[in-house]
Length: 53
Image (cartoon, rainbow, N blue to C red; front, side):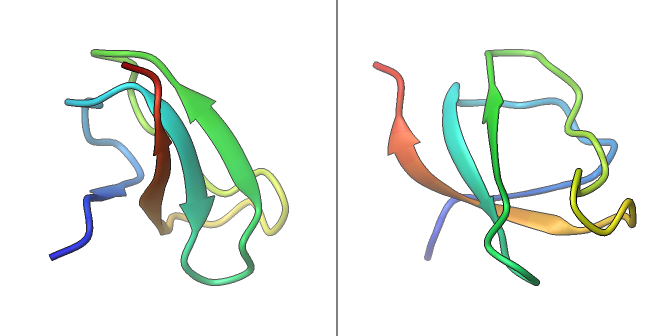
């Protein structure tokens, strides 16, 4: 099961996340709130692609 986070959720694992809709990448730290996709400005899900630890 891939590590997914949705817009509005608190990040449980810092790292680089990729939007499941358009692959736009964002960087999140531990306990950061996941933003909407910066590309389409809509709520989305993001998949962890590179853990920061």
